[in-house]
Amino acid sequence: MVDSDSDNVANLLKDIDNMDEELFGRKKDATSRKGLLNIDNLLGNPQKEKKHKKNIDDFFPTKKSTVSFMDELSDGEFQQREQTVFKKNKTPEHPSDIRDTTTIATTDDYSTKLMNRTASDMEKKFAPGFSRRGASSWTGKATITESKSSAGSKADESRRFNDSSQLESTRSRKNRMTSSSPELPGYDRMQWMENEINRLNREIESLKRKQTVQEEALVEEWKQKVKRREQQFEEEFASLEENHRKQMSRLKSEQENVSQSIRNMFHSQIETLINGQKESKNYEEMLRKMEELIVKISEVTINLNKQVDKSNSDQSHYISFREQQLEIREERIKKEEEWMANEKQHVIELNLKLQSLYDNSEQNTLKEKWQVREERQKLNAEKEAFKSEQLQILDATEKQKIEIEASKSNFLREQHDLIMRVMAAKSSLEAEKSAFDAQRQQDVVRLKMEAEQLDHKLKEVQNAEDILQNTQRIYEQKYQELVALERALIDECFELERCRKQLESIQNDVRRKRNPRNQQFQQVMPSLDTNGPDFITDPYVEEKPNRREKETYHAILKMHAGTLESATSQQSLNTQT
Image (cartoon, rainbow, N blue to C red; front, side, top):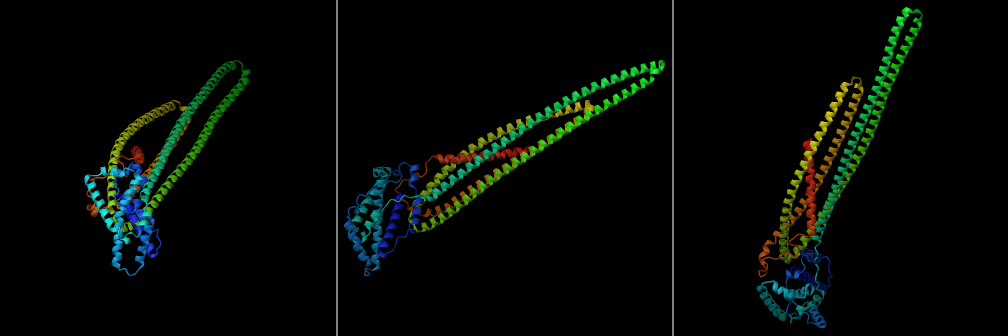
């Protein structure tokens, strides 16, 4: 019914333009019918109607006219009558009132005939048994009113057909009557915008997932590095202890040998002294032996000092080599931080592109809205149909809103369970960390006790403890840098969520701006047809959401899940700090 009314108005305006062209020599203006096409496009799109309803005849039943004089006229009769009408219009002797009455009668006659003609066109387009189904879909009152209207239209046509001036453009109207295929550029653009926003949200979600995977890989890599480093440190420390133990055992054995030789020497000296008292001749030889022994002792002490210095130099070289390795690792970490900054810049650029795309779409919608407002002033006859469609759309949106609220409650329940599982996992990780710290503290205490037992190893053990503290400090610094990097990523996620909420708020504002237009049509609601049914289902929206709407809902739920996970991670970091 909406399509037939829009076709009636469109054909009426086209015929008026053709009449002006034929009478006054004016050219057709394509821009004058642009607004009508926009209104027709807003009223519906046949391609989209087919997606929702398989047969539109169930919603817009009509009845074929029983009497029509338009098909019975031949081409010659139409041409003769058009020529007579042109001659009458060109003569200045006709008064203005007769011209006005003729025009009014012509338009009235055309409107009645056009309704019958559009009914037959609708039957030819959509279904051959359209009139039979249409009669059964409505109430008995509709059948009676249709029979009365067909009888009245038959009588009016028989009376008006005798006047040749009323049929001046019947042939041209018949040739130009086409079923306009209403399109909906505004609806297509909004659908395209929603698809584009969904696509960008999916890209953002994919970037978030890639970022989380990279972060997890980076954390796992650092954990492995720390484990390898601890293993290397333990192996090196064990090797140092083994070397030190071997050196000390060797030095002890050498010291025992030297002391044993010195004791033997002293015993021999005592014996020589005893013998020297008896034999004074061997006194000089005994002094010479004593000097040789003293020289040997000095050489042994010099060798011992050299070995100690050599071990100290080896340890200093090893410490410098480890420091160089740490500097190389710091440079590698700086490079990774620069790479993360570049990824952050890429996300910011993507956000700016999304904002510019939304601004352009908003400007286009504003321009089209002004065009629709200008054309609506010329076509007040379409208000009733437009109001009915708006009410149906509002009912559909309310249903969708209820479904979204239900899905939102289910999502929040699942998210609460997920948060509880995350907190339990976090507590277990903290317990493992505390056990690891306790074990490490016990190892340090044991090492200190061993260092106290070995006083002559105090210097080497202190150096080892300094190295351990430096490595622990560097590990803590790297861990703090990782925490700062994670916080920066969480801030970026919140920024993206804020931009998405701004987009949703702007879309809601645009929808609220469209709602005041619906209030203007409430005054003409009593003039609707009371013979029709109390409620007509929406031909454009199904009761259940289609696959595209489900995908958008899943995308929104995934986005909220990502934001809640980031919020929980930030809360856990705050509790740790």
